[in-house]
Image 1 (tube, rainbow, N blue to C red):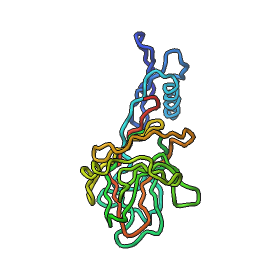
Image 2: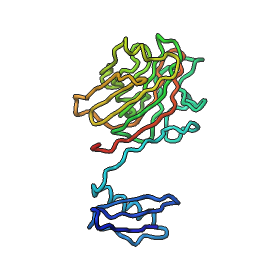
Image 3: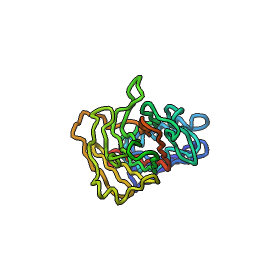
Length: 253
């Protein structure tokens, strides 16, 4: 059902659209041509048309919305080598404490993200001298290879809460004050990573402490990509990820 309404005091017309039992409020600038004859089996098509009209009109700003990327039960929305990732106690677990891992492995989102704020609870279990993992952001897989290219919010050893450039420059781009980090980091326990990317700026927080505020100087580098959960190659190690939530930040916010 599509209902077109008008308000002389406003610069917009708006519509209430019901698609599969869900009602949406869509707006567009007055004077924009919109086909109001939407009914029956073409409701979805009409809703898409109206939504496109609203998006192009610039009538109202988009609102940021927080969603969960992991339902705690399935790998819906993710892809990777499931020989090395499993779901346990509502968390994604990478690696094993029973055997070494010969190469890096990544579980990645199917969707691509540009500007966002991501929060993830993480736990790294294993020898603190060797255990390593990380969260890829604005990244992509290397074709016909197990590795990835892109920024990584790092975990383990002296890399905790650093921004590392995986598969590209192969170095730490920015990191925290080690003494301050030791005061907030909880080894072998849950820690909360918050990652915020807007434009060429990347910021990281660990348990509320800001560890990185980095602006990419190379304007040629891509600033959009998938999110990836890494378990690093090496001795027996487990990394746990849970409560994975993202707020996509609309362009211009």
